[in-house]
Image (cartoon, rainbow, N blue to C red; front, top):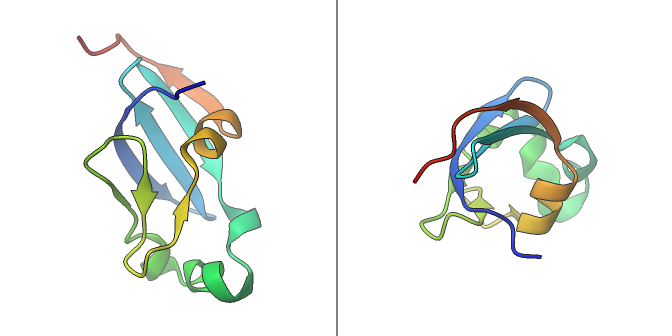
Length: 88
């Protein structure tokens, strides 16, 4: 299943990401599982974790050194926190 496009990603406390989707969904993704090991270890630094950005395609997020998470994991493993009116 193709996930809806994201409009925004906001880093939150405790290595969580707030994800805003074009459908009006707002979800919270717990990234604690991903802040270990040689590739994702940099995410453990709160200032680096906060440097996450949404890529222009609206499906992917990325950190400065190329770490990323699969769009389906972000969508399927996050918990709904709010729903607003979908964007046209």
